[in-house]
Image (cartoon, rainbow, N blue to C red; front, side, top):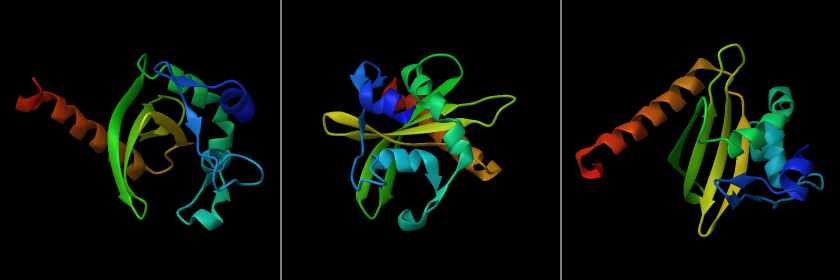
Amino acid sequence: MFNRDFVLKKTKFRGEELRLKWHPIYQNKAYTFYHMTHKGKDEQNRLPDLRRCERMPWAKPTIENCDTGNLKIWPQVRTGKGGTRNRLCIWLQLVDEPDYIVIIDVREGYKLLWTAFVPQYPNQKRKKQKEYKAWLKTLKSPGNT
């Protein structure tokens, strides 16, 4: 499914072809695949995550329909050992199913599909809601009218 949706036939985000993070290659697959199917803070010891795997079919339609329906999308800035990264968060909120979040890394001239996951703890959802509300406030600030 990953190969079909993201390697053989490219997924588009707002009309722009999404790229994948390939390096380091993990078991002959793009590193993006590893991030979308495994969880954990330590990159060398991530564990398979069945929730991520079973939601893999949701990634492409979530990305391609990010401006419709029950989806929230906003920019994020992440700072880490690799420096500052600009990201886009796409949040599919559901009533009878766990939510689903897709992260896109914004690069100079292109975008990378970074990861996708199911928030497993209430604090993860609260953190995303707080980020989203903070972003909405920037849209309503006096400098943005």
